[in-house]
Length: 304
Image (cartoon, rainbow, N blue to C red; front, side):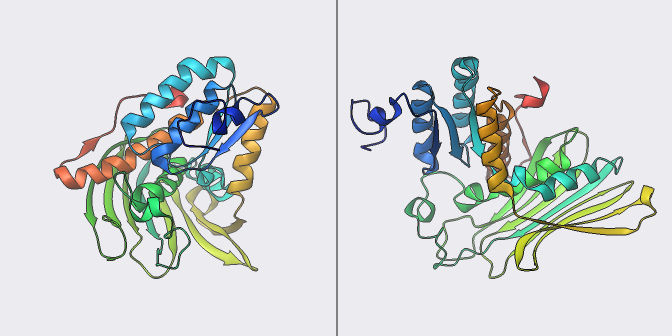
């Protein structure tokens, strides 16, 4: 389709000009993706684009503001492919966490192996990233999206501190982060995310005055997914378990199609995806400055 940024009558520009094309799905390296997203929106197409939304917060914020000012009023949908936000397990966990009363602690542990034979490792833009954070931004925005969805019903991340590490010689630095987060409502959270590991682990646990909810990745009857384990004081403290197979990718595409069909753009999606990027970028920055980093006061979509 020609080079990115081409504005001639051929290639990508010509394809976007076709009147029988209503929607475009864009899966490109993060450093070039936003240019194509704006080309598609400018051509009057609804857009579904991959995460992360942008290589840094400032670039993403500029694009989201242009979308809201220029393209949203035209009824154009722009949805970000953050499938963790659509996983039924995280929906269930968020519902349960809302019953815990005052929340005191959230703990997120993620081991995401990235050996040389992993197909994601073989993509040049991941092996030699032209953006800060490498795999921590590319994959980390998934995990932050899950944490924010489950814990952020009435608040959001306000400040972060972190320590970074680099342990796998074949991975770009950094490949590991240990962070501390404080939500606006006072909730404290810890994150430990590493790609320099040999086995897979996902565990998100939230504790409050009314009990505890934990989400872990696993397999049941041959199907991969997440198990939600809860112990709610109001229910007598009895432990309850429920397994949810992966459905996030299907559900995010269904949500996008529904938004287009009903002319109801998913206004929250770009802003939520951008906040995930901002959290990761500030975790990376905090390790460099040695200081806590305060997230921007730019309001999330829920305040609109």
